[in-house]
Amino acid sequence: MTFEMTREVTKDDLDDLDHVNNVRYVQWIQDISKEHWQSYASESLRTQAIWVVKQHLIEYKNSAKLGDTIKMSTYIKKSEGAISTRVVEMYDRETNVPLLRSETEWCLLNASSLRPMRISEEIRSVFIDESSK
Image (cartoon, rainbow, N blue to C red; front, side, top):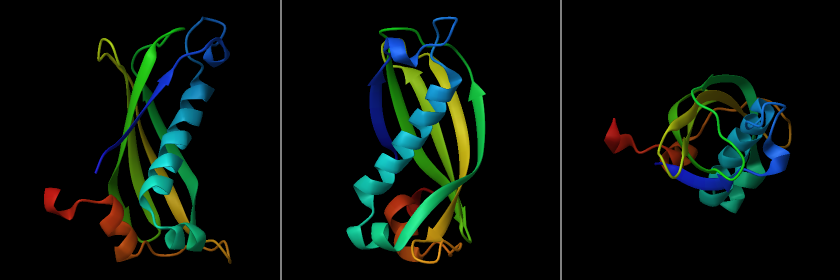
C-alpha cells in the first residue's frame, strides 16, 4: 500500500552547495510518513496512538536543486511488536532519477501513557497489504 506526495524545491530547501539540505530530506521523510498515517488511519486510531522515530537509515543517491519537483513514495515494509519499518523513496519527477531511499523504524506509543504498544491487527490491515507477501 504505497502513498505518494510531491514537493517542489524552494530556495529555503537548499544548503551551501545549492542542493537540497539533508535536514530538509529528513523533514520530508517525516512529513510523508505523518500524512500517510493521517490519511488512512481512522480518527479513533489517531487519538489512541502516536508514532515516534526510533532510527533513520538514509541512503542519499543524487542531488536535487532549486525548482526540481520531488516525487516521494512510502510504504510499510514490516511491523513487529511495537516497531514498524517504513520505506521512503524520493525521485526527480521529471527524470525519475533516484534521490534518496530511507528505512525508518517507528515505535507505536499509547497516546495516554506514552508507553510502547503492540501494533494491532486493525493498524496492520490499514497499512500492510498481506496479499502481496
